[in-house]
Length: 408
Ligand SMILES: CC(=O)N[C@H]1[C@@H](OP(=O)(O)O)O[C@H](CO)[C@@H](O)[C@@H]1O
Image (cartoon, rainbow, N blue to C red; front, top):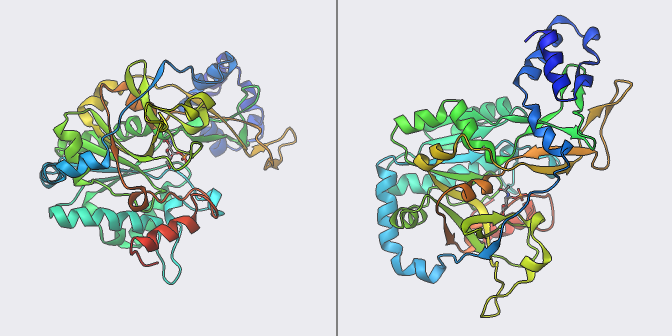
């Protein structure tokens, strides 16, 4: 893309200011900026300019989960079915690791964070050790796809190589990168992070399959005979991955997808709740949950929206392929975005100064025809690390690891 084409693209989106330092740049910087303008989808910004700040939700109703007692009754059959699929190489695992450890006070990829007390225990290591349990049980490697981002790709690949993938067979590890979306001020104008670089951030965890496809990793998975993908977050160190029982339950019910859920520990716990939206499975994220939904009760007096997702989903690739071209809703999130001011100086804002645009994995569930909410024991499977201390922190996760006999 040359200067004139870039300017035309920017003008059409009302973003000409992104080239205001162009004349000051050297040739390499000019080329970088032009390439970024070519690659960036500015149409996401129009949702803000049209004044659409929030997702409009449909008619929300409760959705029953398959509960622990029901699972226990069929556990043996589910496990056998799941293990068979894993042995045949039909189940892959997708680690969503595009994020940084910023909230933990680290400048490194989140998975590189060491939660050990007496020895090094990195988040990535914990997750790989969990997956190894299944590899041993099935006596088969589970293909592992690791999603990184522009912010952490090299550091992640280097770290895992240096640690010899914590014993995982590297022939079964594939990396792909998450796409980025521009970040803008409250008026919808993109920020610059350098004179030659527009501020961008990872486009949310809903972009994982299209990124996996664009990088050729999805095609490779299909060619290798993978039929199901277990997507999971980097931050839950008790995460059971490619869990044979969960896989078997989803397969036996012939669902397009499954979601591991836990009973919420408080009405305002920060997890998304599984529900029906206009008759289809869906998830309302915690920051979009209204007081009415939060406090609704069922006929037994229990919370009507009791089950929250732990960001561990199983998807059938055939069904993902059907929805790959569909546009997922955009969630507009207010954030602190470092930027260059009028004088060209770098500013690290203390308060939110603009928006990032994200697609969310939970919206993929709504696009699919079916989803099995599958209850798990939270003390055994849910130890998310979001903060350094307090709720959902390194500290609380360590406690839970200890209770599960994991030495740190
Ligand atoms: C978009 C998305 O997937 N959000 C997830 C994710 O939220 P965070 O904002 O990253 O804490 O993790 C939660 C579980 O820890 C899950 O309940 C929620 O739905």
